[in-house]
Image (tube, rainbow, N blue to C red; front, side):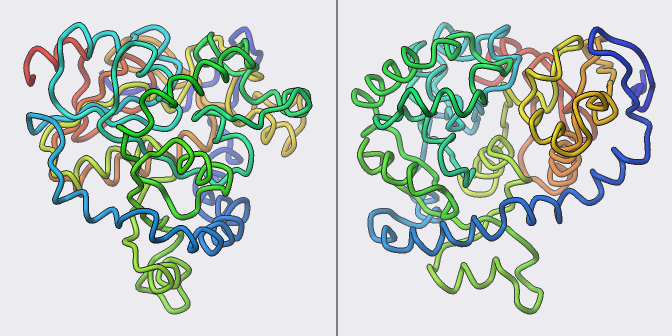
Length: 355
């Protein structure tokens, strides 16, 4: 059954006009828009983090450190499907011995359920938000009042009690941080780098692929020359970066994805989506629906909504998957990431077949 994309419909959110030219033009321009939003900030972070170069190793060094007892890996991200599928619980119950790679946002889900990731991946340069995934000892009440990023989203419900969740993650990191290596992007914020060092996580550095390193005056090439670390095509997001590392660095031949929805369950309020504030800033609250697409997943026979950023992530991933050496299995049981060279199956099926 073909994917029914580009269809206008009505949901509890109101009208969705995903077949509009605005959404498609935004997806086409997303690379430039991402650079305009975070590019210079990422470069400044990389320049500042140069002082910590010798506190870690190059990402390339991971090739000399085998992880897991098989050629399989499972990526644990933090999309809306995680709260429904509980992938860490399944990994624990199946006594999975392959490689577990967690995004920074997936750390709490893994550790709370008895799974210590073999590797953590982090890349977002945001100055204050990302450190919260590691537990922020400097978190203040004023920070919570100024930024509702965590409590308004369709995330793990534990994060609704932000102070309690923060304290829990700090305790978990105190216990397990030293045993979890991290593939840390040089563009990561100062707050994250300092927190990672404080937690004792072994660091493996890599540069973001900000542009084509073969082009004259390439920002990516300049970063590589500055710090000597390799550049990685992360597909614009931490989940895709984790998948790329599993394939191109660790050489895993079968990689399962969990929590990489690139969308939201049908009926999710716009305000509970990651980029809602950015959407409102661009078109206003009354026109927020024009920035979302309603996409049919033929594997689950259900609908999902997605914004231009997540649709761009999807397009990037599907393009990268065509050149990957690994077999990719989407085990989210939802979302919009399906297409050529992406097998779609439940995580239990993957674990039974490939553990």
